Image (cartoon, rainbow, N blue to C red; front, side, top):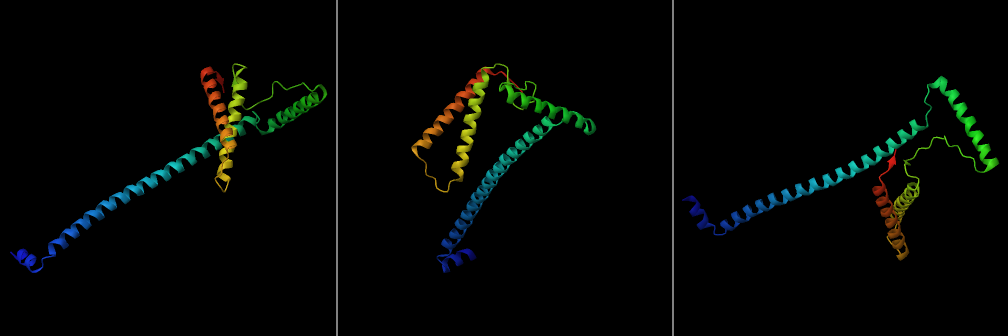
Length: 179
């Protein structure tokens, strides 16, 4: 009964109540959208941090592997003898290369992937070249202050991607790598 009297004395009160209800619903909807947007932003940032972490981890793993690859297999007192022998061996082969221009140390430690098939080396070098080209091209593009690209850059970029794709296809077809 009091509500009817209130509405009769204030005819715009129903519009005011409806406006407040719609405003509350709108604020609730906007808050839900903003929370979803905030979650999406944090998710994207988390993915970026995760990718950066993986890149750092892989580079540190590579450095760690390289460090232990070139290390002496013996403990420090004996490793001095090993290092002296290795130095003498390097000097002998350096002198041999200077004298005969064809001598190579076949037993030298080389840190790289060794293919079973010798023809695979050429494909591997093409893949490395294409990958290196694509990486340096991407870094050069990122460092430019302006984003101007020429037809020649686009053509070279396509050639690099084609070479890399062909090298990857050959690698997967041969599938004969020994690490």
